[in-house]
Amino acid sequence: MSHPAEALLNAQLQFFLQDFTGDALRTHLDIEANAYCDLLETISARDLLSESQVISWIERNILSYSPTDTMREQAVMLVELGLNNPSHQQQPMRQLINKQIYDLMVQRLVERPALRQELIHSALSSPVYTRVLSDVVYHSIVDYLTTDNAIARRVPGFSSLVKVGRNMLGRMGRLDETIEQAIKAYLSRNISATAKFSEQLLDKALNNDAIAQYAEQVWPRLEAYQLGQATRHLEIQGLSYLAVLYWNQIRQTDYMKQQISLLVQAWFAHAGDMPAMHFLRLMGIERDHIAREVVAIGEPMVNALNDSGYIERRLKEHFTRFFDAPETRTLIQDTIGKQI
Image (tube, rainbow, N blue to C red; front, side):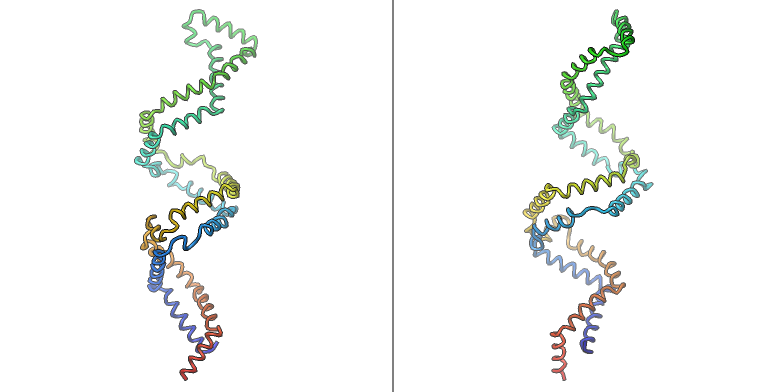
């Protein structure tokens, strides 16, 4: 490189490096952020990226990503630190849910009786509930028949009958299998009606007034309930393994790819053609917010890069390529020759 070219390179390098220090850096970042916002006023998201490009990016960088053990362990470490923090352990629930939000949640539940009825029906019509209910009724019948209870004492002669029954059962060791099977067969035929009846009772008991009243009674205990108590049974290591297994399973399904495509295309149809800055304003992001954050985050990052010499090295490499280019050398020689 000729001496004039080297001098020009150094002059240009120093000129640009001045923009990366002190007040000049803040001004430079602010100017560039506002210039970018000016651009966003005139172009749409579709001008920047197409639907297919966004979908491909999500598939490459999200759906194709399998969390590593290190990533999972980092997440576990941070969650456990948060849960074991003494301030978390002793924090009352009202710090997360205040009375206003709680009342709105109760109101939403009260205003949706169909959802409430569906939840009750799903719970009480399940095979687990009917099996438990059948066992409870069966053992209640057996207990009633073999126990000298208060009702039996009021019925003349019933106590004697129970004693005879107990003596017989004592000799047999247990209920006669025929009687046992008869009771269970009867319950099997009628347990659905019993479950339906209990469903009706529960739905009637959980009316709007009852839910609102119960919610008011629960709130004083709920608001004082400590977060440490609420999270004491969480086993983060096990949950993290389950989360990774689930993600690795679902991310490879056609369902996820179809959902991503559907959602991206729907968003572009809704907002893809409006000016990008207009959409950001609708989302509550103003240009002064963008400029402020670019300066707040950009300044320490650029200072670190500048202090390490990285910016100067990169600029010098690009400038060197420019001044070493044959066209640039010819231009400098011609300019110097004309001046001479």
